[in-house]
Length: 119
Image (cartoon, rainbow, N blue to C red; front, side, top):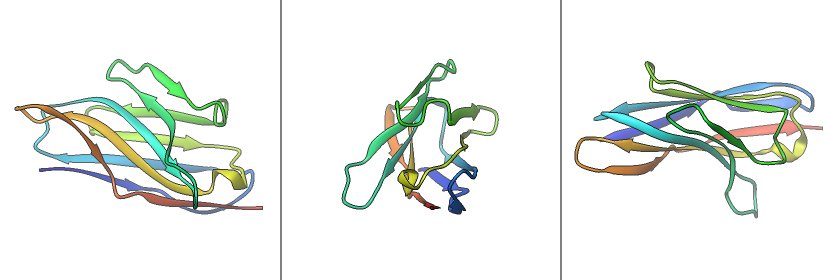
């Protein structure tokens, strides 16, 4: 069984910062591409940022220059450093990862962590 657990969400004022973490556990041989998604009330889930196993990164235009994605393969953990937060960043943030467990690779989702940015 594979689990992804997010942490680090919370309430912050506009202009503030938060750091999200996503820890993978379970029967894992390797982790490929990982990503952060978010879903605001009444909106579709959208990609925020992704990072490959080779540390290539990709960002949504709305967060470029403010958010930084990174990963620590030894800890099986991915991070999202969020600076200069805006009220429109308010959403539930989910992590997603492509994980190889010995038989096949599959995509897994975390349960989500709430980020609320007050104006």
